[in-house]
Image (cartoon, rainbow, N blue to C red; front, side):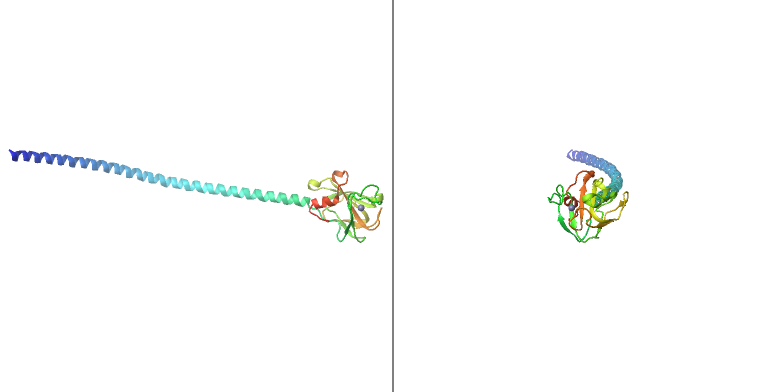
Length: 227
Ligand SMILES: [Zn+2]
């Protein structure tokens, strides 16, 4: 009896073991299936990664190109701004009307020489020295003008100074005619002692918008020239 029980047990045990084995096999199959499906999805995922990598790379190239274009546009803008500033500075840049001179009378000085205060800046030097236009402009008038002697009036044409009249007085000779266009540094006449003077000099006046005179010294300094 005991032997039969043992046999049954053995059979049971075997069945149990077999069942367990079947279970393991099932589990293993399931695992394999899961594993396969995982590895399949992993491959798909890897494919996705590859695609997204390509996508990212394309995007990065696009972004880099866009950034480069932005940098280029900014650089171009900066260049244009610098050119504009340069242009503005140049248009504001005057030149001295004479060389080798001494300043002998300033704006606002009082003297028996003038009916009112001195309305210009005097550059004294040898007679016959060349006088140049301090900036680009158009000759408005030339001729003898009483106490001012031989006078040339040039209306500036460039930049924020357009419309400003510059007077060049006491000239020995005038080298331009009304309507002439002159550039900064162009010869317009020669120093002399015509009009109310004590010696040869250039009397320079600055009339913004053709109005009353302002200090030529200040105006010259404002235009990057120190007399
Ligand atoms: Zn003067």
